[in-house]
Image 1: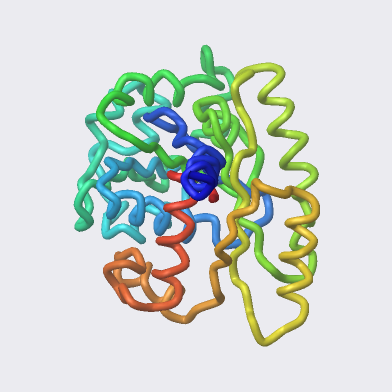
Image 2: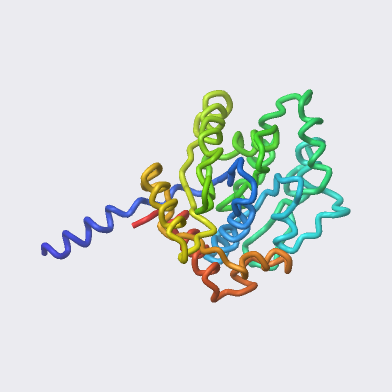
Length: 273
């Protein structure tokens, strides 16, 4: 009897899965921290769990698009057309080679959108309206934001309810994070009262160095339960996968990176035990 009570208590202690669909902005104002890698691979692993997932590429470099096998040159419709010409988002969504995974690609034209959006009407909420029109078709929408706080990132934060922040386990890892959190708070107060930083993922972890372990400890001390338990290792295979237009779960499904991102996706979806 006592054993059953303990088991029930353990089950109750597991956080419930948040209601679907979920819109998550992946953001970090520091460049080169694995933001796009995290977007691509978390999205692919959520899709592998049977969850319909859409990756919205808001970065003019278009790395999330090419990393999922979408050639972003010469696209008839892209996120530029969605934001600037109010083309329906469904018109620019492309399937990927991963079942249940879709991408709304960026094009180089998106670089000009930062300037073109300045005089535009309702400029901060264009992405939100576009996503709302397709939201019933997906369980997850992951928005890959640029590494700057311009109008594209503001659109991403205004459209999302959650923010996932990848943090590299290296020196200066927390540099710029305070500014990101202030900007998230600014968007929350002015545009999107439901916005919360819900998930921190430690990436580029090098088990050979004390520094990586120290950074993870520091991040956990700052953010507690928001930090995903699984750390993503620094991996050549993870770095190579985008050049083949594949997420790590198809490029090298048994690699350490694939295993780590599967764990990240499970924690994002199910919560930590």
